[in-house]
Length: 330
Ligand code: XIL
Image (cartoon, protein in one colour):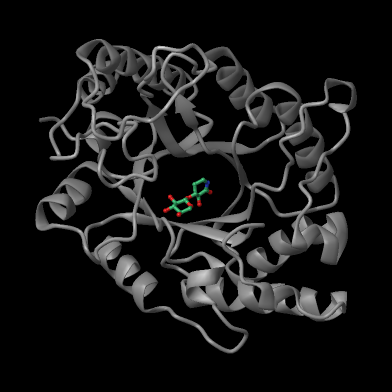
């Protein structure tokens, strides 16, 4: 089979997420190393895992991932420095904002510094925009209520980007979020990014996470979002791509359950393949803006949306119709 990374080598990097190589089978590691040119640590670089207490760092698993990536000629995309989730409470203990700011600075300096030259890009801030949805106020910036916002105010984003740039001037720095391609959240993302750029935040790129659902992929929004971000002078990556197939049960409209055991129908698999093909046609068209397209997982077993069959390989590492469809698109 043709390797995915080779199919797109003239356009952009192809990556995947996972906490490799620990607890992956030899067959999975071989598949990962062959098809993908970049890896995002799925959980092991998140604050709760790598910095569980103020004076405790756990680098072992991330070091193993970075070494494995280097051995296999893959780049590493660091994920994630400042986020409302999977971040331990010790960061926010006490009310003194200066102390909390220093903790953020120390976290970023130490982590980015530890991997300087080995991690080529970072999700500096993840998911700071609220889901909201009030069209009347779409023009204003909506930040998600979070410990970071409460402690440091809306400047927490600019601070995080400045600390990251200082720690590794060569790393490509991302703002990463989901659903920012559509509706009021897209409008909010433009307001936020313009404000950050005006304030001199050293932000290089936007990560569109790309957790979509087969049959409901917002193709036009995605294409417009890519060009909107490009017109701000930013690069774009699709950072966490997966397109789910959701089984319906009970036969009742609006009541869906995930049938984790039921295999997807050929019809569903072909519809998913078509969605993937259309997506990659858009990405190819905008290859001058797009740096990387990373899948969030390796196969339909190594995915946070297990049971919804979202990736290119099935649970036994066999290529699905979606694999053939995107390789054909290249
Ligand atoms: C998910 C992981 O895949 C899960 O294993 C974990 O339990 C929760 O986080 N957006 C992100 C990722 O930025 O960090 C999330 O990853 C998926 C949504």
